[in-house]
Image 1 (cartoon, rainbow over the protein chains, first blue to last red):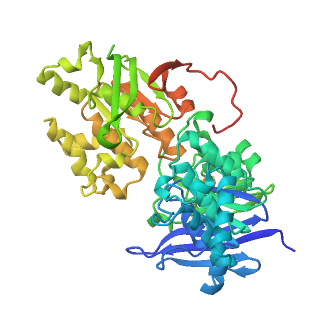
Image 2 (spheres, rainbow over the protein chains, first blue to last red; image 1 turned 60 degrees about the vertical axis):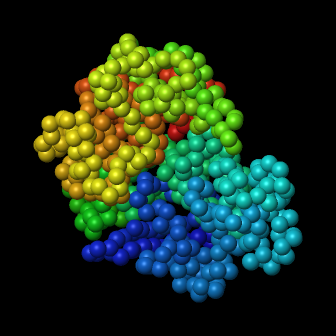
Image 3 (cartoon, helix red, strand yellow; image 1 turned 45 degrees about the vertical axis):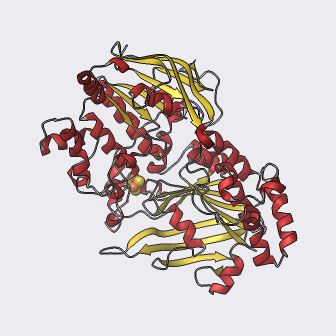
Length: 312
Length: 240
Ligand code: SF4
């Protein structure tokens, strides 16, 4: 029996553009094992959030998604809407960014947390609310019994994030997909959110973030995305000790604690993705003649690296 | 001293009928020398931005004085005030607030030339753009068509036209990814080296402040305490 909880194969997401379609996610392969915590890092515009939403088919109708997302042997991208609805929220849950408008402003937080239980597991309102209250308490909401009957605007940013996590985990899904849990969160509150995520032991979790601090503390496996492609996948310890892809190296070298060394230039624009060669070529100090051809993902000592230097 | 403040106090009135008073800044003294970078750290809501705005004269203190080049800013003549307005500038955390979303970058960047009657040529504008790492291709874009890093560079270009002596940098990199953050900090250092501009760098990131600043203050409950500029205890994390 496979130990993979989710297998992403050749996943591509395109949006209609003015001329050619805009490819936001380009032929991504990624495997997430049962109980594994994978963090996908990348800068704004790298395609990481689109990838996450595409897994649950939460993108606008104009998006064209191809490839496979295998869950229990079935392709989520080709599943009927009914079957997907049953799985979404119950087996696979999405935790949106806490700073956005993910909570319904006119419903109490308790009802919103209880809803997946009523919709997916047939709970009656009373027991569902009871479970919601106890979960909110477990996740650190003070006076949960009272606060469950409050509205989102009465919650602080950190409490909203907790409520969103509660909504995600209440039906005890097998897989959690979290979008930028620390984005826009104050420095001091990041630790709180990290602890919250670390308390979700035993869950399979895929998180996307631009926050390397969170990635280092939380991930077991790190995947790096650059210009719509995965460029490196490595176990957390090895990644932070010695990243192999030149972009991943630049990412860590730019951290204040590692010397604040800036990498020059910008990521290519979407309209340039079709140009041949490695997408990092123009910024890469180690580029050589082979880089005019697009590198595939090479397996290198148990890691995956999209770079000709790791061609073996 | 270029900028000096003594006994600075600021109170906000909040709540229904503005009856509750919160003392955000309490008898603060701070100074910034020419060409120096002073860090200001503290938790969110600690009043860092308030203190920054008090030093720029954009906010009036309830007590105390701010001196610019030795003269109290409340006593500047209208002519001196105009000069002060030009020489003291702010860069914000969200650069988009400094740009009209309906204007192309060219128009936004030309504005300070007009406002401050600085001779304007396209060449001069391009030269300013080049120093911050932007080029002519950015000029015809709207703010929404620029990345956070590009927009922050444009904001820096726009204030540098005025040749300021003192810049308050209010968390200028906290919304950017690490590579763009490093680019912007290095750019600010290069500008300082060339132009001798002084910075008050407001941040929540002590590690970053230690790399960038000659002196660092922490604002706690309205009061300032000076912090060591080198790491004292070893930190366990590679990224913290
Ligand atoms: S393939 Fe070439 S250009 Fe791309 S990262 Fe590797 S060395 Fe650099």
